[in-house]
Amino acid sequence: MCELLGMSANTPTDICFSFAGLMRRGGGTGPHRDGWGIAFYDGRGCRAFHDPCPSVQSEIAHFIRGYSIKSRVVVCHIRKANRGRISLENTHPFTRELWGRNWTFAHNGQLRGIKRRPLDYYRPVGTTDSEHAFCWILDRLRARWHDAPTMPALAREIRALAADLAELGVFNMLLTEGRALFCHCGTKLAWITRRSPFGPATLVDEDLTVDFAQETTPHDVVTVVATHPLTANETWTVMDRNSFVAFRDGEPVG
Image (cartoon, rainbow, N blue to C red; front, side, top):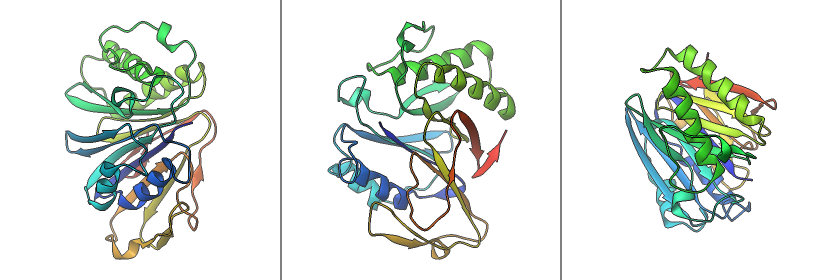
């Protein structure tokens, strides 16, 4: 199974610490050797990096780990292939435009029969069931609304579409349009919100500790979402199976 990592923050924040833990699982402490990708949002812009190599060996991943890219929304994925060959076009996260915004999607799981669902406007570039599911979601949203709806209405619709897809198999999802981070837990997903007073955090997969009190301001709110908790000395909220949550500016919405 693949692993997911997402972030929602109320101020531009780097994800170097959490990414350091996740990249170790991409062929180091974990078996997810079949590629990785990450997308950072800067306003309406989206800066994305992909590599079909294991993240623990990837020069691009080492660059990302050491380069502080500030963002309010981040989506990251490390892959263990089960549908679709190991290739750049099959490397998550996937991105498309809808309503003048870049949408980004990453998925963990398998969806039986998803490719039998017809697509109207969006088409996959690769061969994964995940990308087909992403195109199907955007098709449904585009068909329902000509322009972007309110955030509560959008969250309700994405929740319903995610529940529909979960009927086909394992569906753990991170989806964003650069403002909200929509999260569906089919089997495994957890999150933590860091806010003042900040303290130290130690990674599970790497001998690395950061004292967030030295890296933040008292007004910062940062929520990190991951397949498995990334730190050993913090209390993560483990989501229930088939549950949904959306975050904006680090806080739950909708």
